Image 1 (cartoon, rainbow, N blue to C red):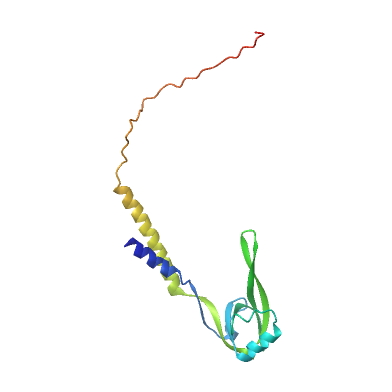
Image 2: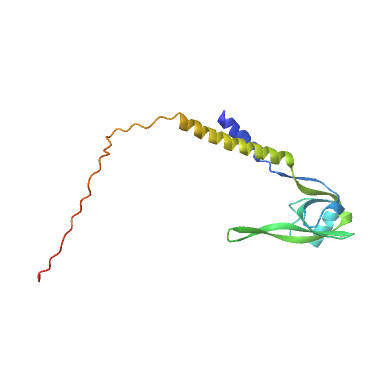
Length: 169
């Protein structure tokens, strides 16, 4: 029973708490994380302009941060790799400017209230079940039996002090 609850709680927490939903490009604020779907003309134009192989494995979808928006073009920062400084990691990206005419649709990253609530409830339930098991185990446990006698009589501590004598003394 407890294993099934733990597995269910883990499965509820796995999908994450964010999702991408459709958004009008004009309503997306600068600095928001977006996903852009490009037309075939946009992919061909981007492949010609960018010769670094960034676009080959991503397909017609680009995910990044909106950095600038103009009437005829948008600039997004696409994360390429991460740089580690100490224990902190910061993304390194490439800024791309795309004509608005080549964008088919835009999605914005938003907090998913359903999965967030499910994750919080599952986490709280798992912690509560764990605490209940600890309390239940503490109430129904027996004192351990010792096989050796315990001597609780205090005994004096004795010390020996040695004096060294030199041959001259």
